[in-house]
Image (cartoon, rainbow, N blue to C red; front, side):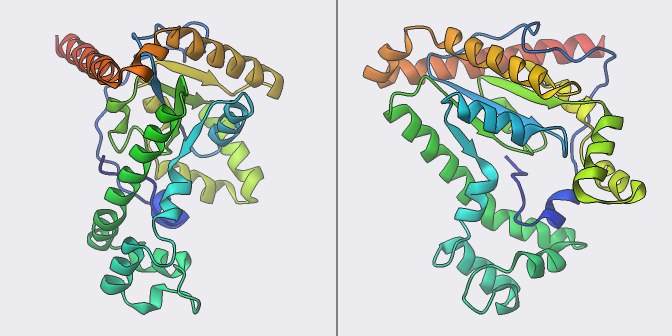
Length: 278
């Protein structure tokens, strides 16, 4: 997973994208029409989207329905809290100038340091990403120990970082690029040129859709969004069925189910790749 959320908005928005995606003309699928792959009894679902598409709103709605959320942005802040090894490593490499007087990370200062320097961003990623990955794994394990049937990984760069390969389902929150632009301008009070530049620094939402098992179309009203989230919640619980209790009581079954799902998805990706080359 090479690109989890960076520590500052500036670093995140300007993170270089290293994917080449084959485009396809298609209408984004909603939660009611996508064809799901088989799920393990304890399903880890990846949630992503683009800036101003409404991913955070969907995450909050899922949480309101009792779905446990593992938020990568929250974990990215937690792993650089005062006293953590990651923060010590950042200060050692970038200097005490990236720290506030109380010893906390000065995100704005760090953002200025790594903003236009790809080599420094790579160093920052090497420090923080392993810590975030470990924190995410522990949070997923805690969900399993509590007997949760499903949990959602809320990761802005789920696709860019390759984490989408390791979840049972990928859910992408979508809206049209023009709506996305208008919402971003309204939210931040930015000019059209500035908002367009921020969008252009990210992987286009239409390309993220190509990785989705389920697309939540947030182009409509809040009520329509709530209905799609309700359908998604029901679908996740239906997919878990009753066998999740067996894997909770017998962990090897859960590990086997997860490995089977990851292998099945890898096979499907391989078949799609071959069909594109024909």
